[in-house]
Length: 121
Image 1 (cartoon, rainbow, N blue to C red):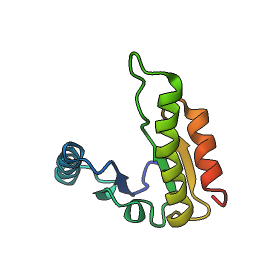
Image 2: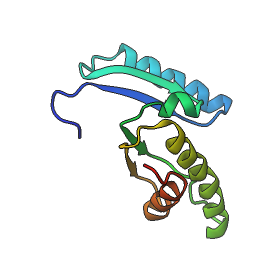
Image 3: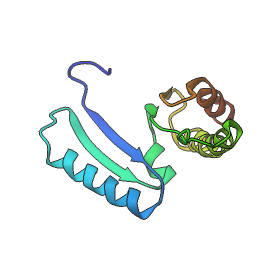
């Protein structure tokens, strides 16, 4: 994605929930213990400022999941809250020439939300 010899720093953000935080810590330790020569650093946090500070690239890899019996409107309301928050964080902390990739369903709507709340990126 970034080239065969490009070293990367992962600044990962997730929800501030006990189960999620525990899983994030385990994943962080796996990455640190692994033999990934191009991984310069991996940081997992629930702090928007730390996760998006000076980001060159932002990969949005999740959204509120579709659930049986839930109306589409309910799911979109949840995703709007999530991606409005992320858009504000990208606008505030990421570099102005940051590239953002939305890889979650519905990607077009998520991209539109982030673009709306991060207009200078």
